[in-house]
Length: 457
Image (cartoon, rainbow, N blue to C red; front, side, top):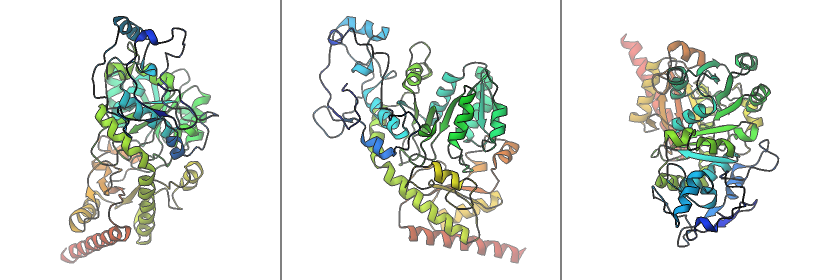
């Protein structure tokens, strides 16, 4: 591999080397570096786009502007002795030596470098799903009998993992807290036992913005590792640059942008990523949530225009939220001046990327939420009734009965998830005015429907 530099470097695939060509005295073989961490540590305000522009550009095998896809599951060596050295850890992916794609794959590693640059971490490894990234990190960092402090407002699948699966399978317990209450976070941490503080940068679906720097300070003072899910806010927030140790993603959402790929990522220190790939004790290596190289290639081609997509998602979400509020709807969106964490996000967010592409409308009851979505999809084609987010079309779901359905009614209440909460991932297809007119027509139909019901009652 070519050495990483602070300026953009170029790399062509070269011919296969033998293990004998490797210098015996080189002492860097235990680390696989995916991206340069900015000078000065994590606490920087480096623009993610600038960081991505500095990632080494991989050219194709025959000089193509795009890198070649390494679709092989297994790799050859020139000499039998090289195989022994690979399994002994003397040679590895940092020197372009590969064994098996469940371990490391050149195409997947390239995507890892991009993800590390995006989040401002030293390394990253990409997985087959967002949940596999989350579960692998927690298993690696916490271990059997350990303790986690987590936000009470989380994606339903993560909440189920922490509430049901990990206690049963590993005796890992979790204390759920309101991360806005910093004293409650401090009190929930059990020194010597709590291993991880886990929260979402912007919570799903309630859109609570976490005070990442302060939460990191609290955790680090007690020797606790901070893991942040940044699925809702790529480009908008950079948790690692604000002090977080590990950032996880469901790449299936904004980073993919096409609602056609399931993928995840773990971004953090090279020491953590390498430990997770350890042949004897690595959660990623042994559980095997391996990303397909063809998927990695597709994703690597989408990341360069992520910033443009995020800006348009965010621009439209802000405009729609402001207009919806003027119509008298109960709107939750961090870009609105009356959102409790509006000032916080403005102060810690990356400049020019807005306040996120998701807004919520509270319709009061599940029935009214469902009728609104029905008219928006089937009456005016404003959006689609579907889970997930980050698609170019607007996606809508009633969170309490869908993506947060794993939670009990009491847990939903504590998290602030009302029965009529409609989560909208605002897309960018069509013109803004075209989509707004569709929204207004659907709302008019809903009002007429309600009036007709009252008349005939």
